[in-house]
Image (cartoon, rainbow, N blue to C red; front, side, top):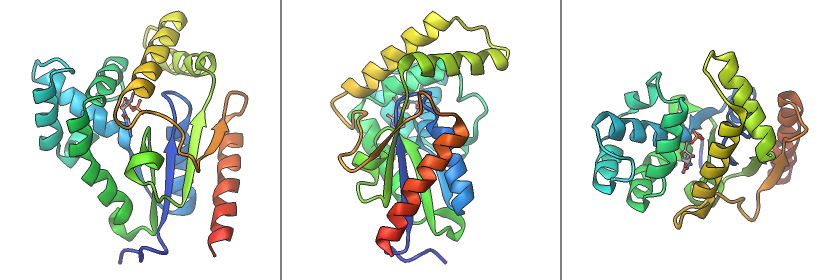
Length: 222
Ligand code: C5P
């Protein structure tokens, strides 16, 4: 049975690309027994559908049609993580009607998490500001662009993908600008978010720090 609204724990994890929010959000969800939704995959899946149809990601009509036709299995595709898809995702994500079409699905996940979970962790760019403004805990995970580029570059190399650090850094900065500069749901910390700068934290330290904030919030609530 789904948890009552007042018991439900919703954790919003926002931040720029490659700041470590996915790893952190997944770990929080698993530790606390919560459902997890990577909302970036939703935008990536829409971008993939647009590209597969031979359209450009800034083609509003094609992007809105893809967002409206999105099925749960589209989020399971194995080809959503590459850089070209991320880039195209940030273009479709700047179209207001695309965001509107995807809002209900994300809110439903937070309000009635699958498999009767007592709550959910959602990561993205606008979870604390737009999707779940009443989230129990809001974390804004960030790191310097150079550190994020270093991590992404290492990840790509380890996956056997050719990568040039300066290119990765330039692409990240361009993506940050697009995500922060758009008129609808721009990337920014919610006024009541805890900012977690992971520039000099490893994944374990970031997790412990985040967990400490969640526990403080839960104590305040009980
Ligand atoms: O987090 P990820 O890199 O997978 O997200 C891909 C793109 O999707 C982001 O650059 C951003 O433009 C968009 N996005 C968004 N809002 C979210 C999640 C992702 O605009 N909640």
